Image: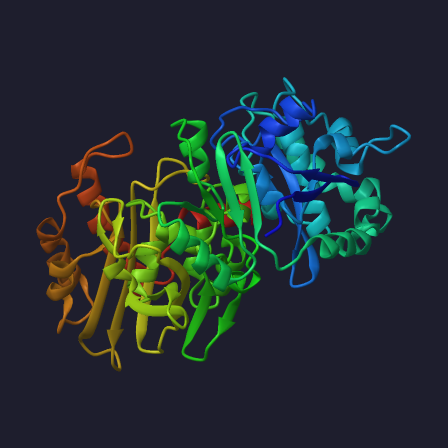
Length: 496
């Protein structure tokens, strides 16, 4: 094991021997390094005032991602590069093109959130040339400005490549050098740190992970920390030990297995979205609305499932697609695995079919056959960066436009777990796909669910919406000329 955390802070090598396992990047920057450009607004990954950029190796190439420093644990930066707003200015004091664009376009109101906006645009510039307005808006959706100064900031996003060509950007010029330095830091050893708050482990292989989880079955397994981070910043929990999965490259792999896609548990939402979009454009739209881009950069498919939230948006879609889960643990002859239907994994609120020392290794998602219809919808109070009131995902099978032979209707937000609507499914089987079939399924929904009322929606509203999503499914598959989605209307407005 290696007992020293190593990463780059800008160009500087940082080595730390002792560290609280849940010390956030933001607290370390502000309290230890006195780098106060990154701000704390919400401390839960919503407002973006704390946004920093993390560079990490992805299959040998340097990849930059905007992330929320307020919920990212410092030891998870092992083998990475951390860039903050302080690093953007040149040695001669000159502004970076993103900063200069913000100045020229008057993209600052009170200024508290400005460093976060700058870092989100900075990450966008490093990854994409001449981004469209919609991409700029996507990149900024995880940054909130209470002064309503969005238009000048979007204008700055359009202007940054005009101020200085990308090839002159020193961060892009130094990409290969930084990649080589990070490659030298990454090894196959398990990182093991101790601090006042407890122990932190980061294995580099699945085999080492299985050994650690077997040795510490009560450990908290951390993927992107987009929810676990809040256990620390909001619930003030002490997590000891913490086992971080982010250094295991094989868990980030996405492969096409012919009749299905295989997602490693640490496959990030950005990559998962691109792969699932090949199955259905509706999955692309669904995942576009997962938090802000900072959350999508950090969050993973395995974390979204293993977290067990009843309002997680991905499990209903995966259940509708008949996905299966690969669970792994240490066995007598190495790593042992078992495969179960994803829908069977969720037993009760925050309770899953996961044995002691078992962890999620992969998700297998079947491709859609030509005779299948698929639908996914999310209903929330805001379009961007909001938790669902109801999420519905449906898959129907019909042969040659005949009666429905198979129905899989899955919902989130309707029960303590993501759950199929068995009675509604039975009401569809053997019927033609029409209004009568939909009304029969809607009438059966109260037998499937007794939803709760909370701050996001009342029980009556949830049942109403659950039925209306089936109506939307019918309209979209029988009346394609009828626009039913806000995303489509926004696209029309942008081009009109």
